[in-house]
Length: 264
Image (tube, rainbow, N blue to C red):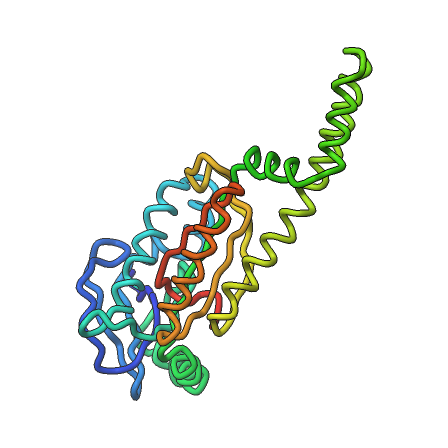
């Protein structure tokens, strides 16, 4: 039995979405007034809610592959003429309707909300900012700036080896606490500095190195809704922060535009 897989909703008369759907089939449009629902046909036996839940536990590769296909369709639907980024309302993975009529009923029921959401997103884009840290470099910078630590290390140099060892452990513990406190202040400052050039900002979950694929640990994961007229200043601020704080061990990365899941 066939159903309709819904990727996103956007305004009418947007360019065709030239990409394969989540199951390799054609992506097409179902309209309602001045809205377009971007959909493709799927086998309900494969994509039913119970089956997706089972695969989420037993077949993560299938989930990963389909989630990437889901995201790719939305990203294609966002691109208008001359590469203009169009406002879209992205749907969560696994949003499926059994019939065209059921989908159109939903479009009718939530029409005003969809219209309002698309209007709000007009001229705005979602961007991600991630900050990574070389903790050793950051710690060394902190030690150099701390007169207390410098005095303690001079004192240690005059002590017998055994006593010096235990005092060094105490200093290392104190420095670690100072690093954590200073790091929190730095990341909050970074977030607020970047946010000044955006409409909205949110802090996301810190991802482990196994997920980021990076050598350095992530210390800030932020998402921003940026007005198109401020994109240049937004990017400039991040690049300036990257240059200013590189010697302290920080590395900044930004990417986008992404489907605006976080601000709709």
